Length: 109
Ligand SMILES: [Zn+2]
Ligand SMILES: [Zn+2]
Image 1 (cartoon, rainbow, N blue to C red):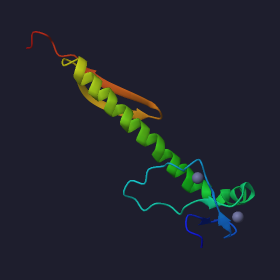
Image 2: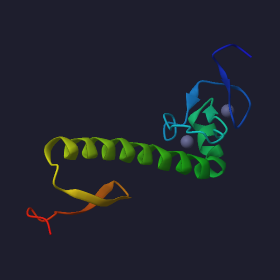
Image 3: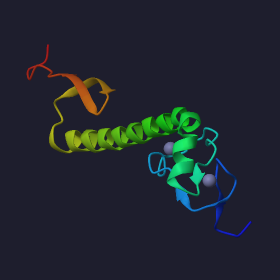
Image 4: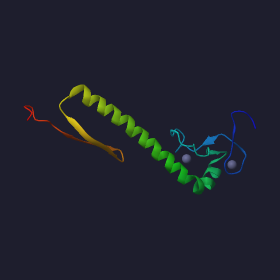
């Protein structure tokens, strides 16, 4: 095998294409799924029924990773600008981050 050149998942020929859907998906510490290399768009289409489950899993990881860094940025901003709002919970719904918080009484109890 030529270095730098991969093998087509479908026909085992030399491949230079990769599925763009899961190309930059983070691996985390799970076992990375089989690399998706293809020699042509036809091979990619032919392999799609087998690949789509993995691909969607990897794409879900991508959006989760994005949501996590977005949440980190939000939390950082909240800490910079408000000290009175107490965040009691935060959860991610698709691409939306919901923060639930309580405003403590200014005079206390
Ligand atoms: Zn091929
Ligand atoms: Zn893919």
